[in-house]
Length: 264
Length: 121
Image (cartoon, rainbow over all chains, first blue to last red; front, side):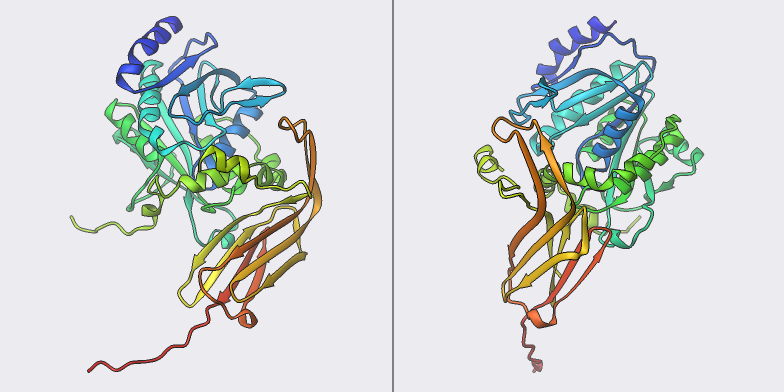
């Protein structure tokens, strides 16, 4: 089956989604996995959470994503070249993460290619982990997590898990497009948004997001180590945060602070 | 940001300085600048203000070392955050205030501004 997916992607993606290719390196038979998407956004909540989950669960690298729309950057880790956009997981879980900021021009082709792939591997739920920028974050001891669902099934799931829903407002950026692309393909998707610093890496928000994620996927991960390494993570994530913040205006992130027009 | 600019504008120096993440916000009557300063204690922060600049020097309680990193810089240790920001408007340094909580430094600087109330005819 895996070879069928690869074949399909190499044939169809350049035509349908532009130059974004999902490359599966490892032969995993997906069993309706839950997808966790942790791409760079406000507070790097998704990136920090996804990296910590991959590390703690010791997930294998399943593949990577390549595109001419991505910056010409490769990561060197322990002397080996790896792509900055990678996919980890096992038969039941898929984690998508990136070590570089998503160029605004790549958001639509990337989310289209990813959601096509999620659909083909029979994903039962796509969970985007991200942040909700708060001006008064410094005064918030324990960040709360809010949720958005893209269809009735997703909303039902959020209600069952007693998640607090984001009732009114705008959402912008990669996860906003991801929700819509999933909706077009009939995929259930939710976004978990932890209150966070807008332009500073926020391991505290990532810890709250992981705890909320646990309601859906029972990873049983202790976030104590994440909080213990908070300062080290902030130092390491400095440059990615800076790059992500630079692309925020083009991602229309400012609109998330706007009041929606209230009429029925 | 272009690749050329990224190469020229590194966010660290060979002298052991790291550039902290910072944010500038116009509050109307004042300018707010915040800095993210992990591994820094309040007593190790120095802020110097002029009419149109804010300069920060902050010593880390524990230095950070990156090893086997990049092609030229094999091993570098950083122990200080340093950054100077040019402000968009003149400020009143003497009325500025600062606070430090959980590694975030906030500096509030009132703008130099004379208000004149005008009547509507």
